[in-house]
Each structure stands twice: as structure tokens, then as C-alpha cells.
Amino acid sequence: MKSVFIREIGIHPWDQLHPTHDENYITITLLNQDYSGAWNTWCEFSSLLKSKWPSIVQWNTKLLPYYNKTQEYLSQKNFYKNSKPGDILRKNDSTNIYSQVINLDCDPFRIDPNRMACYRTSVTLMLNTNDSLEHLWRNLSKLTDISKTDDFKLILSDERSISFRFYDAETHGVAQLICHSEHLPFLNKILQKMNLEEIQQEGVYAYIHR
Image (cartoon, rainbow, N blue to C red; front, top):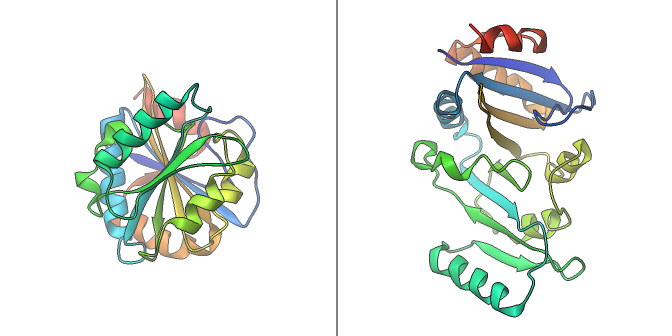
């Protein structure tokens, strides 16, 4: 089944019941009847965005402080064993919670989809520069999870970046873009080029059960 998309003004996280209709933001939802289909559509979509946002990174929080120094040490050891230059794993001194920002492959088709659907603890960002991730980590380390629409206002405090989250449900898969509405004209051109069908929220059930 070919993916469809939903275009909405405001911040409309797929997992949250109370969206905001703030006109400064836009939400584009890529929906398929399975996660694999949604992922492939996202890969195609994000590949067309690379001319404007060439860098893909992922932020992830550990949610809770480590119980002891051994856990902390093993986490750091594992991280640095697999990290790339510029990746950051660090503890917020106020909360004692670790979070990380890592560089992902700039080719979306080479990213592992199985590591992307942790929507409560991670967010993927496309950036228009390849600058140090230090400022991004400092900003996002204030989050302990992603559970409110206001969290996206913090995530998108740099208006030049765009954010994605992924959902792997039993009946469908979703890749969801949330960003500032100033980017909508460019995104509309990409959606038109992909020739996807647009539906409304009211049509989600019917699409999933086609």
C-alpha cells in the first residue's frame, strides 16, 4: 500500500491527545499500513530534503539517573566504543540524567529503522549545518522525555532545523515531521514531487483498513 500524508497547522504529535494549533508550526505525517512502508517513504522524503538540511542527528535521553557508578561506566564505555567523531554523551548536572546526540548516516537509506521508533525518548533532527552538536545537546538536555507539545518548542528553538519521530504500531507505521511553518512552501514542493495522496485525520481509520 502506498503511503499517504496529513498536513496540519500546529504541533500534532501522533502519540498525544492534545495538539496545539500554533500557526508558527507545521506537522506533516507520513502514514502507511506498516512501519516498513512508512520508513521507506521517509527515506525518500528526507533524501529530497538533504539539499537544504544535509545533516541528520538523533537525540536520546536515558530517562532516569543510573543506579550506580558501574552502570554509568558501562554505558559510557559502550557509547564511546560505537560513537563517531562529534557524538556526545553527557550528564545533566541538575537532573543527573544522561542524554546523547549522535550523528546518523547522511544517507537515510543506510540508517537502521529499528533504532528510530523510540518516540518517547528520542527525536531525529535534520540540520542545515554540520556545526558542533554541543549547543544542541545543552539545549535538549533540559528534557527528561518527550511527552508534551511544548517539548517540541524547545526541540525547535533553532528555527532552521526540522524534527522527526517514528511510530511502529500493530496496525500502521508513521514518520512524522514537525517544524516551523516558514519551511512549509519548500516542503509542499517536495510532497508534490513525491505525488502522495493527502488525507485528513478523519480518514486515518479508513486508510488503515483499506
